[in-house]
Image (tube, rainbow, N blue to C red; front, side, top):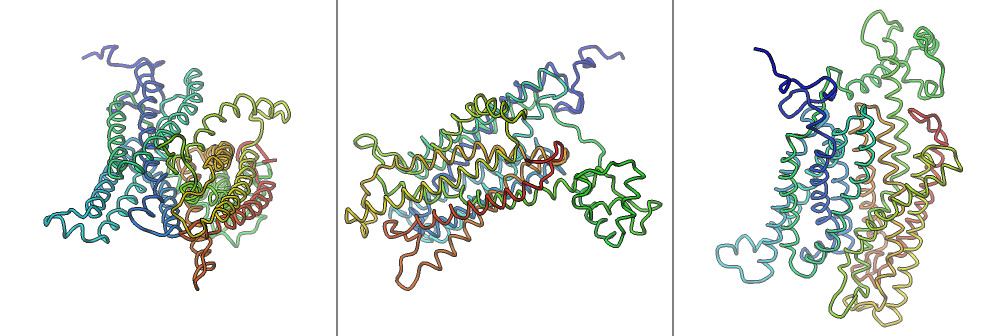
Length: 569
């Protein structure tokens, strides 16, 4: 029976390398592009709303309903955020190797909703228990604060696990909806990333302005339930776009993790091979000597089998070796950015606790929730990104003659300088706050508002936002661009892992300082009574560490060789 034209996509209307939801060749006119990307942006807005609905005010819940000390709560927040930032490595591996991005997003969203539901339940138990009105049926359950704490931490780490699968896949899946071989779609893809960030920070700002107020002034139960509902709606919207999505076709190529791993294994096995044999092999393949080929030369030994020949056994191609080298080159950049990540962790912990002690009133009877001050980070990002793209880049391009104005590594370094400046300002503001508290006899009155406007904290938040525009966006672009094509999802996960490891280091640093400066009747730097604490010392320490990290970073970038464009500076 002949197949009608309606059932057979025209060759020039078919998108290469993609299938539709039924596994058929996908038609350009009925799939992908903005019709699909809008669904994906919607679920990202919902996810960011839900995520920041927990993370932005987590320290307030820990020190409030759960009754933890400031130092313990800050360490817990950093540990949780660290896990949430490292788990995308696992999520990216599962998506790229087994489930695919679409299925991973669906599964992660379901786990996300489950975690938020259990979190709401834990807040409900805490609320009923604290009210003192529990009946005989629930008295046994609610009489155990330990159960509530276990349920709470299980819930938030379940959310972190779900976010690990969601975060590295959604943006990549959205970009998959645009065909870079088509000029119009290629241009639209660039615009997609702009709207992606706009949507992401829209969700964040909504959380910080509305949800934090509900949590602080109305109900924690409602404050945790709303993100769960929003996430469920986001999942429904995402599923509605199923029939319009383009699904990338996996070829028969070997798993990229296996390919890169083989390079390291063969290099170790061939450690006794002479470099003269390697040089002979490179010459035989017609490979020209470059800066890249000279760097990490021990990996070039993977070009030969252990006996120095190519007559038998599996060997690696020069491309495989160069991709392995590209990954190694990222390690020093990754490590030297950890100090920036430690500083980044403070905006949702100690900055929030500072704000809670200050005058937050706008009008009579209305106060800004301390956690809502974080909205100035997102707001400054939204406002400065157009300035960076439309003003800064053209000016820098005129001076440097580079298409991007400045290199990716220079962009990252600029943000690190601004980050160090934010810590200096934070230390100065905290010194002033302590001085005012002492001058008004409030040193031993931690529950009394310090007569200092909370707006004094805005500059450090704004500088955080400016630093993010340079460093965070730069890191995302850098780790995506410099990874092998098949591992770019993992590249985005590596970028996120910087902030995960930084949060764990921040937690360790806080715990160490708490043990060293506290005890024996002394008030630690992180005393529950912030009027006797010394957050200013901590901020000065972070400023000094930032300067050291920047110096190490500059040293590493001097020898960095771009995978595609030559030297960094």
